[in-house]
Length: 325
Image (tube, rainbow, N blue to C red; front, side, top):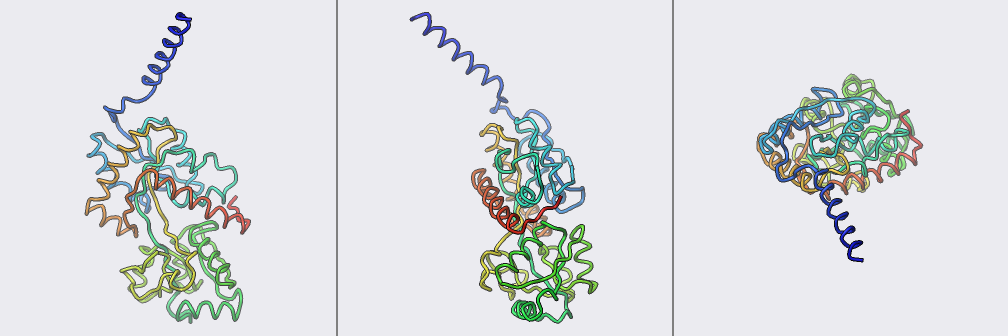
C-alpha cells in the first residue's frame, strides 16, 4: 500500500510538472514579438483602428506587435487563422459583430466564434445611422413608414451586401414596423453609399463616420440612430428606441481575442494593456474618427457580448433563411 501511494504521488507530481512546463512562463511573458490578425484589408476601418492601439499595447507589454492583414469571406479567413494559432498569447485576432453574423450567414464556418477563443476585451462600438438622400421625398422616419405602407416595395434601400449589419437592421425594421422595402445589395459600403448620393437608391444604413460628411454637406438626412442614446453629432435625431423600436438598438463592436486555451493570467495581462491604450486621448480621437466609442470591459463581459449577439443575429438570419454562400 505504501509503495502504491508513493507511486501515485510521484505520478501526480510528474503530471503537475509536465503541465507547468507546457504552459508559457506567465510571470515573464511576453518575451518576443506578438501578432494581431486583422481579418480585413490594410487601410480599412479595422486596420486604421488597430494600428495605434497595437503601438500603445506594445509599449505597455515591452515587445513589438505586428499587424497581419488576412481579409476575405466575411472575415472568416483571418479569424480562422487566429483561432488555429498556438494558445500562448502571442497571436491575437481582431473580432467583431461581423463574426457573430457570419456564424449563421455562412455554411460550415470552420470555427466557433464563441467557444474557440479566449476573448480578451472589447475595443469599441459604433452606432448605425438610417439616412435618406436629401430630395428623395422622405421628410422623416414617420414619413418613411407612411410611404412604405402606402406603396409596399416602392422604396428601395442599399446595403454593403447580404448579411451585413445594415441589411439585417433593415430587415428587422421591416419586420418590426410591418412594412416592405426593396433591398439593393452592393459589394461593399462605399459603392452602396455612392449610389444613394447619386440618386440611384433612396435609403441606406451606414456607420456614423461614413454618413457625417454628406450629412454636413446637406446631401443626406438622418432619420434615426441605432445607439442606446442620441448621438451628440446629431442630437436632434431620435433613437430607434424613442421611435418605439428598441429591438433595433444595435452597435457594431470590435474587440481582441486569443485562441481558446490561452492561460487566464496572460488574457488578463492583455486586457490591462488594451485598457491602458483605450485611455490614451490620442487613441480616443482616432477611434472617434472611425465612428467608434471606446468600450473597455473585462474578458467575461466581452465573451458575453459575443455570445449574446451571435445568438441574437443567428435567430434573425435563420428566420430570414439568409445565406451568403
